[in-house]
Length: 77
Length: 538
Image (cartoon, rainbow over all chains, first blue to last red):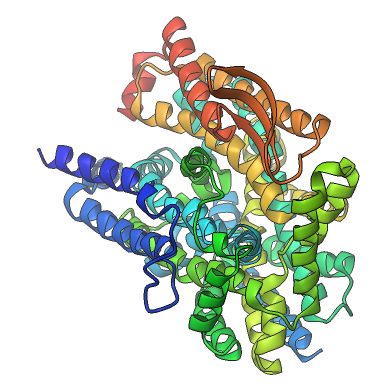
């Protein structure tokens, strides 16, 4: 279930990159000078970082690391 | 001249870092130490050096230049999509490659492919294709260095000489410091150009009297208002760009960098902070590039705008050569430096110029990667390491660094394309089309060497075909494309002012999809590796 939710989050963010609704307008100007299309994608970068934090927190491939530790432990001294 | 002196001081510092790394490694002649820093990078250096090595000249110069001519779309095209796709590939692919490298001692991606698919010469083919695609990336750094020093010195340092200085400095610290020197220099450079964006936007914003006035003035101008939206950009083209960041993980220098982390958990900070680092650099550069269109008192910027205007209004009636000349004149890779010269105090322009140099000198790890690939995938693989020893292998790697730098410099002097176009059209699309190899190797047991060969040959053929097509069919003037065949309302193949489109998409889209299909179909038709080999990976 966790994997499905995270997978949906990744796909959703990828789809949200294609923001048709901001295509033909510069308004509103955020802080009075940043066109909305640019601000949206700046915010998108922050959302991407939050998504990465979520992936690291809940889907970290720890088994790869454990395997390495185990193979080191199994190795002859 | 003061800014140029500051930049030269900066170059001396990075050269010293490389030599310092060389001293630290004194006595160690192992290939793993020279090419991978003994797989010992800590989390901080790993994050900043991996990020820094992926930020080339166009992170600052190309992005602001592209934004000057195309508007705010530049950030969405490359930066925000990279901020999602690249950390994802590091998370899913980079960590696995690190684990396999640690377990089996791989130093290059081709070593892993050879082992994974039980092949020899097919690995060599992949190595050659990767190497050829990597050279344009190195050229970018030298071109950017030449442009930067030329502008910062007010024309005193000619382009050819600036490029030569940058090439020599990069070659110097890579030659001496190997991966350790490269990683340290990249860390220093990343810190510099992370600071660059924030300082530049404050200084230039203050100089321009605030951005609010400039933005409103642009909105009031019919010629400039579209730069604040994406109305001139096709959504298909915009979507196509999300395929380009797939190239990052397929770049050999990025994969090799993944092998340098001391522990796998060092990837955590890298994937989380990667999008924020992109934001910190690209957003100010794109915004300043757009705002440069409102600057009226810099003659060079006026000349670029005039060239752009003539191209748009009279380009259709001109000869292709005249159009190319106008494109060259409207090319704006130096626009951010012109802004700094106009608005920043002299001493600050020098420091910011050093920040720009930091970005344009990111070709170091590409040069080192080529050297690693040559010595590991060719020299050592064909028995020369056993014959001559590891010290000779490292010496050969250093010699290769000198040769490849000379070749890249020669190309940089002759290449007419802008930094941005050159990078996108050849290297990035090609490496994106090679990314299915990694996915198949790491996640699909049934994949085979023949599938990998088919995908690699397809990539090489597609890159050559696009290059020939664009050389034979001149770029049209801004406006409608030159169309070759239609299916219903779809244009099958068209030559656009900026490149090539296939069914409205950039070539990278069909290149990646067909590469993945070939990998899948040809693998299904051929024998899979032995079970004992597959068991090593799954």
